[in-house]
Length: 324
Image 1 (cartoon, one colour):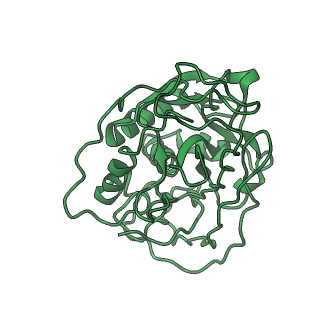
Image 2 (image 1 turned 120 degrees about the vertical axis):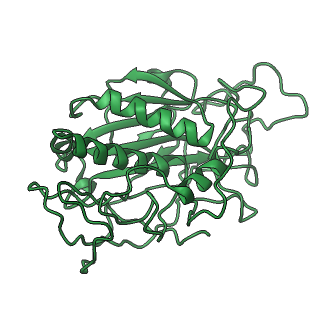
């Protein structure tokens, strides 16, 4: 079943490794906001107010524990304006792109590049960040083209690249989506990152960017927040299919640097990254304590569970939209 679209930050791990009574930061959901103009941007609003309350660790750990959740900032992208070419019965091999947008269909195949695995029977809870106009189908990435990903190593912890490629392989396995890891980039996560950057990435949507920042560099990581994740969608027409086109994962560099100093901490760090990538492909928080997308946990759930997998299978079966 789908749950309310609420956001909650990732709680940090106690430096001593002691299992604390974690406090869930609960935040009111934020409606997506259309952005107009020649370029489309993923906006990151300031972190919402926090309300602290006592909570119980569902599955305690003796050595290291973390609450795995995330804050998703997913503003809508403005629908393509009327002057933008629409898909016809037969689309020309090359369609001229209006200024400010990539040429439609760049990198698109005629059929899905992968197939999602069967969803588990009788799964736990899962939910989607954004739905299509039918109110049922989730907004997803186009399965007929790879999801390009780049990595910023500025402030990254030791072993960051291996952690990212491992997480992307796992995400591909559970969605059927094909993630094309392109390596490192000089770009760093910033608020208002453009999702079309032709001077940097050429005639295509900007790749998903994964990187690390400090709370000073990214104020939204202040307090107990350890990660941010989300994607932006576009549509070829006002009432057309919405498709995610670019996204971001911003993780707390100092926090991850501490986590990866132990094997257990590295497992928790990977689970936080998986959680944020779950947001990137479209999963929202749920209130099933057995799921990785649960808004708070003690770190005992280190990988996608049955409800998560059911939602991810649906997110891997989105529509192919070559006219974007």
